[in-house]
Length: 115
Length: 115
Image (cartoon, rainbow over all chains, first blue to last red; front, side, top):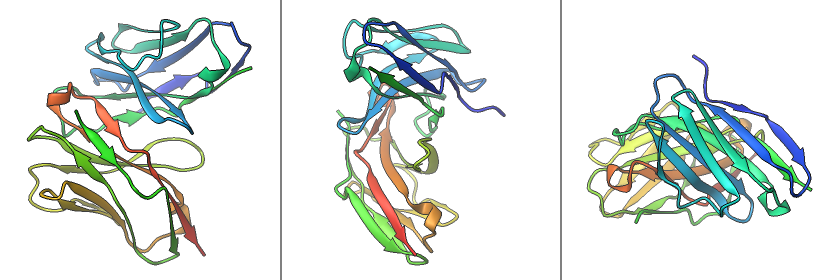
């Protein structure tokens, strides 16, 4: 079975540009999570969806960040406009909601560098 | 609110020896799961082992085992017979239904296995 798929794997952009990160969760999973990882702040949960509905977006840094999940097999995280402090590794993870014993499976991450 | 504390920023172990990575947690939920992930230098997050709050026995997965002490709210990871490939960051995480099913991570411990 394919794991969580993220694209692009690496992104270099200039400050002010729009960045879109993409994620395809594992088939059959109904929860999807977006995380950001930096040296300073560690692994932070940005937002998560259950059955395509955003449940908690309290981790989204500011209005420049937005996330969508139009269907069960696709999600995007958009940063507009991007800033150098957004440079980080962004992970998407998927799992089964309603079952606390189920783990989350992470994608390979997108390494974002904003110049 | 849930919280995970990993007090060891870095650990060293000699190859073939065992090592224990500490994890303490705080939650008000009676039902929760504790997870350990490994993040090698390549960056991916790899699920290692899971322990349920109602499990009577400590979880084991190959060379990984959990020293689960519920009264002390600790879930330490034990790696036996360390290998050079075990050098990585290790994250402890907690999840419960009462917290909307999301997962909270600790700051991580960097393990270095010396030849």
